[in-house]
Length: 367
Image 1: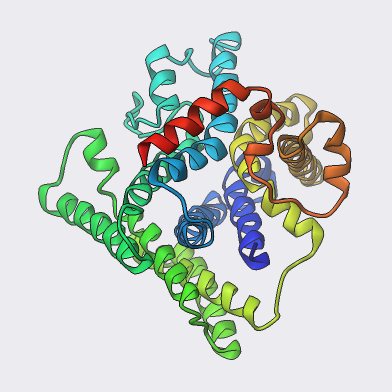
Image 2 (image 1 turned 45 degrees about the vertical axis):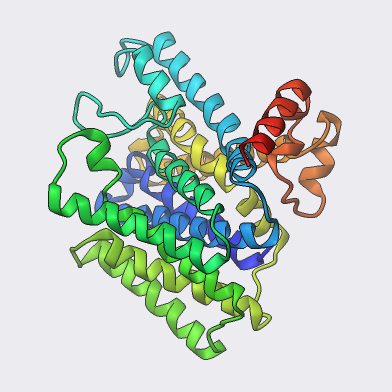
């Protein structure tokens, strides 16, 4: 585990959370456009994902099927669980804010199939899950690349496929939902992360001072893009994010590590935090309105603090328990050293030995 990558995950998650504090921050006079800077957390996530896939494939060789199943195990249980919760709430609270979610939309969301909502936005039931549609697509491409020998060929093959897709989108200008979604330039950010991962595997590092400069410059460009600059996201956000990731792993090599236990724990819980924060903050928005907290600056600050504290506590708790082999170990997991075990240690996952055996057998056969 690279400490700085785990720290970047935590930072990226809270950047995305920042975007969804608009209602609570309104009484403070914070412009919504300023909070939109947090959207760059997604770009960091995509670049980190590309980096981690290259590192994982190099450290733990696997078959294409086994690799993809491992990704499914890490992503699907939590995402499906939150999706079902949101789906159920849409019926229990129907008529308050929005109509119930159609069953077909639920099915498409569970299958990571992009679709357009009535307002034209391509968003699943859990709206932040649009990024997971991209992630699963990237995982599929990367898993297939494991059929090729050598890390360099795999990186080149996946990067080439992504470039071809983006190029096809620019030339053909597809009108279908899938065509527009999977040819968006943002998918190039996975390739940026893979390039950093491949360079890291070949022991290429930035000098310490250069890494610090790249980290500072990348951060300033990200902020500047959100406030002043306009242009293609993959260029103005993706490339700076690539620089930040490259600088972070280089600084780790130079013994500059963000290894604080709390930060590493938040990095481990970043996926859960990313998924649950819209639901948690939406509930906080409604509670703050009912309690009259948004009528003053002090009340708004209190609402923001409570919203962040509750969201973080739930995310960390769910993360800890999902990575323990038994429910009794949850408390010690949260108070002990940071753990990065996969969802294969999840209580629910271990309660389904037959399913686990079938998936493992499928992965072996698929090789």
